[in-house]
Image (spheres, rainbow, N blue to C red):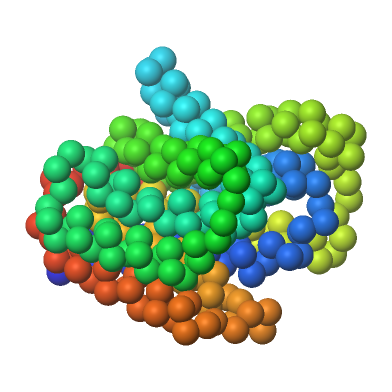
Length: 292
């Protein structure tokens, strides 16, 4: 395996595993107003990302109108709408339904590039089956399903809308700019939802939870994902979305808040097997990454 492929695999796997760990810390912020909390999370992440961007000497890049539209769509669909849909689907039907629908991301990204290689399609199918088993099928309402499908569209857009921007901006600036744009939208939604109660001083535990969500799940995971995406292509990178429930299972076990069932472990095994199968598919044309 080439070094770029190895680094892409390591980065994508780490990014999606870290995203999965958010389930383990979500209990720390469950009493904080949801949308105000998301605005706080992305605000902290935006400040950190902009500071790192400046420290690395990455100057602001002038974008065309089309590129601004892509960046705005990425922020709106991949961050704001995704979070709204996840929250509202969970409220309508519980977390299992949206988790199951999001488990189809590997298959959706495998199909996004046209006709995928059979082994990539097979691997994606196995990953979906494993993620579904690990998440749990659950039951839901029509409203919950519609919100979950909106979340799926947001998750797909988070990757596909970034691909045209990465060669010019690089992973760090795409992460920083999209995060900055998400803050005011989430703040407005929070004010509409909860009024002046959308923001309050967090407790120590809540501050620690938001710090983890901002630094680890947003800053680190976003940059790892956007660095790996051009190296692997959306189809191969999408395989690693199946690691999200695996990350949740491991985090729950480490923190002592949940013990994995036999179905959880079987699902995790299927995810790993599916990724292994998918990575044996012929590599797609690599997306050039001019900026870093």
